[in-house]
Image 1 (cartoon, rainbow, N blue to C red):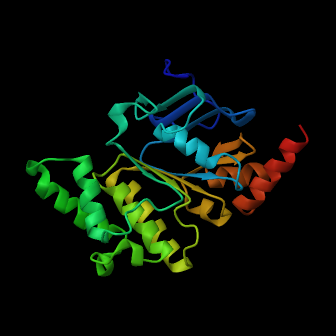
Image 2 (tube, helix red, strand yellow):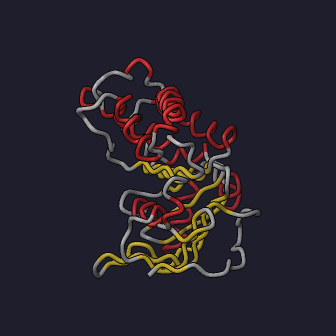
Image 3 (cartoon, rainbow, N blue to C red):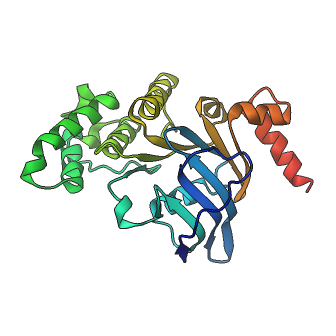
Length: 262
């Protein structure tokens, strides 16, 4: 059962200031298997944090725990000052899953209008909803496809619609589960410019999972996962320096080898 306790002392390498996310002893079990094993970490507010590790290491499970949709979670997990899953967080978090979450029989604009109305219903909010929909479409560069049926879009475009939905209402925390998988290098670069702008210009906290190590270099801070364990929590520069590596991928492999000997 999730619980919220008084903040624990900071762990080594933790960023100063009030974090957007703080976990202590975070554990998730699925049947006889322990998926996440006593994780202690924090996610600094207003920064881009990368959650990296190979497929099956627990990244998606951790993200579901953050947004309150994961069962059998124990330990302490506070998000934006509330226990994960609290009703108060629903309008403050944008979440993008690996599978695009859009209605195929609606256009891009209609999808966004529907979700905007769910977030902020009522006639009095109609003007704000229209402005949010327009900005979200522009953010993900789908203006030329705004009136196209989502079912006629490519997989990458459908993923961008899901991202646009998550951007509605200007969430304080964006949780993005491998949002660049399957995208061409140009679109990946454009999306990373968007993620950086959301943090630096709008003050949003962005948590992005990936198994592509070169994306780690674009992050302010990294959480490296391996088989449910947190191998490291620090900046890309610090991880390279600590391990005597030239890339984050080399640093990750060094940490894996080190863990195997202990």
